[in-house]
Image (tube, rainbow, N blue to C red; front, side):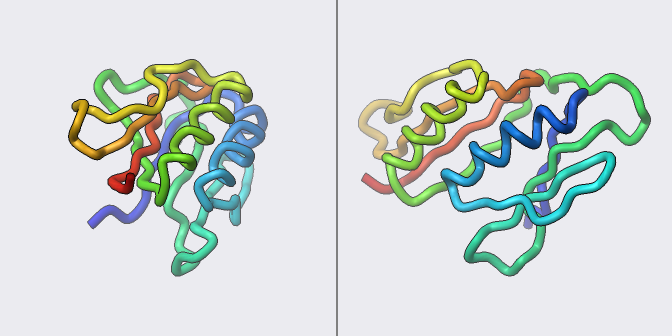
Length: 127
């Protein structure tokens, strides 16, 4: 159903450095870059770009959507924890370390804010 997801940035080069290292943890690599955006593709996927970080098309300041979140499903809890740890090391801000939400559900999440304040999540249904 979803073709791809985009988040905005005011500093594309800074965001590329952040997302290159962060998304590598969950199996996404940057495969496309131009003056306004960078696109990331799954290592084992179809080759289609799934995630973009971009300067806004209207050339206005990129802002955070209140209530918006991008969530990446991964295979293991270790990947969720690594996503959170690497995100913080790269300058992101924690919105919740790895844990089951709700407790006992078996679904394991972590949340960070990227360098622009976009909320991003990694989660798994696997124990």
